[in-house]
Amino acid sequence: MSAVPGVSADWLAVRGRADDAARSEALARAAARLTGPGPLVVHDLGSGTGAMVRWLAPRLAGAQAWVLHDADPAILSRVDARGTRDGFGLPINIRTRVEHLAELPVTAFEGSSLVTASALLDVITLEEASAIVTACVVSGVPAFFSLSVTGRVRLSPRDPADQAFETAFNDHQRRGVDGRRLLGPDAARVVRELFAASGWRVRTARTPWRLGPGDGQLIGEWLDGWIGAALEQRAELRPRATEYRQRRDEELARARLRVSVDHQDVLAWPR
Image (cartoon, rainbow, N blue to C red):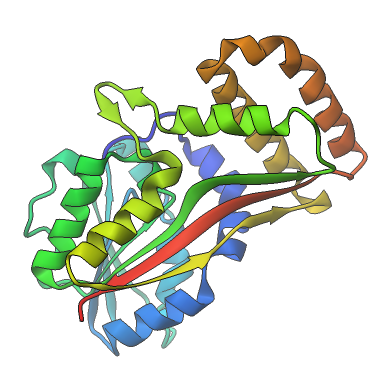
């Protein structure tokens, strides 16, 4: 997989509980029906420390072998699937693969049962998304992609500056990185269209984070990244940022701040 700028194992751990609460149970059940009773081979792209395998493996039946792909060997070294069991309560098999998405062969998923990814599509390019879809289509392997940001954020109480920071952040998500133009909040739509153009069926589900008083650490770190990316994109927002963040921090300290960060899950399979 292409490395995801700014992603660390510590950040993945902080967001883990919110991710698991947001993922679509309905699409997971549909994926389980598509894969059947196993034995299964599942490829997880941009796997990080293994959050998707920990969440999804118990929802799939039968013996499971997972192949975890990531470009960052340091993150892969922290994969933790201890105690993870399949839907029958049996241990799963895991192997890791250090790999860049640009090197993904068209036959990468031959003989597999399912391709998954979590919080990946919005940080890849159109060319990389096309490579993933093509590899799925060539091998006839269903895909379940979870937690792609859509760009829609709602903070409560509302603030007059919210929209400016949201727009700047979304522009930042579509930025160019080392010659790569990221899909950002367009990712889920683009991937849906790519699969549909190949004649595949597609289902989607809204999967927002809904953060409140019990999520103070995550809200704080999310605000750091959200405002920081907005300022990187539009430096002219900097004079407003200090007071804006101060207001939000005060609301957070008083347990008044609630945040909804919209995502979309996508399930695609051949007709």
